[in-house]
Image (tube, rainbow, N blue to C red):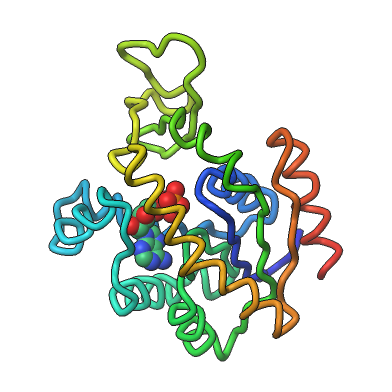
Length: 218
Ligand code: ADP
């Protein structure tokens, strides 16, 4: 166990980042902070942030840096993250967000940034077949005939397709990943904080590589 680790997990949409973050957060016993989950919760609650974010998310766009930075800095000030550290999933997504994160985390800097590497050609099919639990966010893949009523194995919630997992929104998100998020690889690489992990393989194989990479580094 690594007490108080502060990690960022980067990776293309559909690279299995969310699932690996959930596992790693259990393994290291540190909070998993997903900005996608935070925004989707705001959408469900119908808050002003949620109403604004829904249109952006459904179109496959990015919510503004100022809003995202405000949301994340508030979350990082909560006791669990201050004491135990965190795994950030989906943030930062732009160089502007990364620079602000370094400022916000100046007193307790990031330990490591992991890039889960999966080529674009491999993620397209996975994203189109992805279904998620509306309540707990568990991920599933459609194979064969999709059940008319699909309940989550973990919590019994409805398993549905995300509104932003349409072909247009998927392509837009993947394009934005290349133009906005990929430059973070250089940003973190230059400061010696980056570890790249091959994300191709079964979830167990990838998790094994991930934990070895994280533990070796500490
Ligand atoms: P994905 O599967 O596309 O990686 P996420 O669940 O991480 O999706 O995020 C869903 C959507 O929420 C993104 O497409 C984007 O619109 C918005 N979002 C999440 N995190 C950020 C962020 N750091 N900056 C801007 N927008 C974000």
